[in-house]
Length: 163
Image 1 (cartoon, helix red, strand yellow):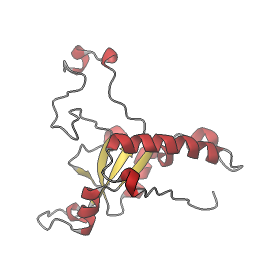
Image 2: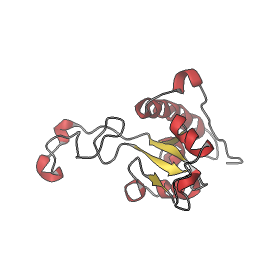
Image 3: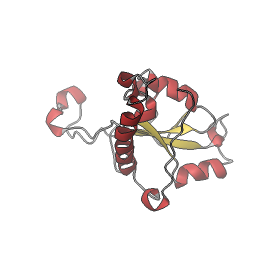
């Protein structure tokens, strides 16, 4: 690539107050088109495009994320705690299929409840998105995601990952 092409979607009517599920579907739709466009470039490696964080994750700045950056909480004391966060949404995350659920393997009778406190109604450990510190750590996060380290790096909301 000769340049970095950030793709920002700022449709307030469409995205204001949008759930992570809605944002995830928008990412999937965009990614399908983006992948096709990028694969047609003469310098593209088509087998890699669909596997990069560029097409499999998106940054969402909702009201809480924006507020965390603009009005940091002075009560937070860690070195990165008070720098705010953005939401990182994973495109390929799916609610588990009840047919694939094995209570003996998971230790949970309900495939939708792993005993976690609800995050946007979800009681699974992995809710398909996480909060990432806005302190410029996206480069480290991108590297981890490129290496398929979601499970190692994931921090369940309301925690904030600092990488």
